[in-house]
Length: 303
Length: 310
Image (cartoon, rainbow over all chains, first blue to last red):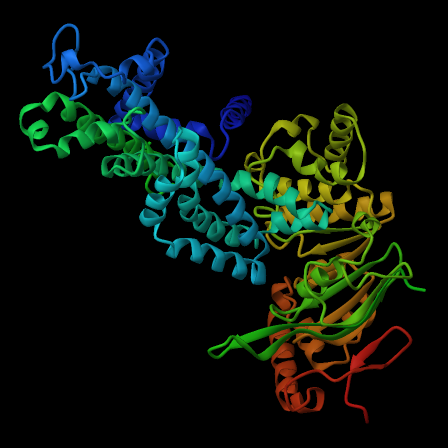
């Protein structure tokens, strides 16, 4: 008898320590998936390195043209050589990675915030509200993203990380809005939402304090995967010349030097490092994102 | 004047069809239901699945749109939930059928039970905590439960949390929508007896919705039997169980299982007889569309849906 009681108490205690879909499940899934764990460690290290070192670097100095040291191969002075303006490629790579990461994170957070709010309202109210809001969303979906970004680049004279992020956000909030809306439509039929209504909570309060926590896991997963996509989009735009100007380096601007055949063939140190970095960064974010995605679905979990 | 009066309540859901999503037809979930509940009593709504009993309950508390009819609570018209003052919400609460989906899995018990208190009463954190602990004790859960999450409780315990939340504001009327259907039989009795206890203690009025006649008999003072959105019979518990008048009620009462094995044969023959009677006299009790007629008084408390001529 006593033994039974002891066992019971023990199980109760172990149960107490875990919450149903908390960070512990995410963490367990990542630890179980070695690739995701390595990716996560790599991501943390590289962002710590990039943000740390760039504190001691002066962007003005690095992007200043130095005609006496054009196209130098890697040396002890210039670890990754110099470009056609005699600018240090290693310095540009650090600042560029920082800028690309910042843009990616900023765009993900801003588009996430807009998308979540939009999707929650549409899904929670449903019916006519949902119908009207989805038509507005459809309108944004059919706008030609690239063309409008090119026009913006022409209109806005001086680019900054903030203004560029805002332009990207304008076209990238729809995916998450749709996802949240479809989940909210399911969630609003559940009894706990109805119960909140009968207890006199306002609609806004129900959306933010009752519904949102129940959607948190898919939000985290979706935003992580979006981060990889957004870094890719920024690099793509900068590569095409519609992103940052040359005095604000990013991974994409460095990569665009490779459009010069001379650089492509003889000066690998300019474009190979950013190319590898983009590839590895996006793969790493994706690996972590996929592990998180599996963690939200009990049937796919490995941990 | 009755405590809660429902007059000719109708809840129709449109069926959309065709290319432009026009309204083709209506599902008449509740089609002209009237009843009154006295203060401190328990009124039972019984019926098979899809008979509209849950919809009636949800319409009263304002979760379903009311097509026509009137709901009067303590002399105040509360038919339109948007025009209703918030005090009504405070006085009428609901216990939900499913103890799993009716509690937010991401919230601690403290937040779940305190939600109505936060909406209506200005309390400090400490007062609120104390009140929640009192409520949990009242429903027989330990006060330490406030830091736990719903998944750490069994179905019966979860339903008690749901009840604690419903009585937090000291409401006058509680709509209990099949509160024990999702629980196993041993726990059912516990929860039901507990509900009766707090009824006496707090002077509650229940609108008790269930398909389980045993539970209804145990709990209710008055019973309304629903079939396809209408009442077929209404009366006190004795009226319904001792002298069912409508053929549908008769068959429903005959279907209650008898646990005495020696009477098995007798009981089965009785059921067969009622079944034959049901099939033969079906058209005497239901109109061409298979719907019940309007209610006619049999005695001062007992009403049966019969054709006008009798």
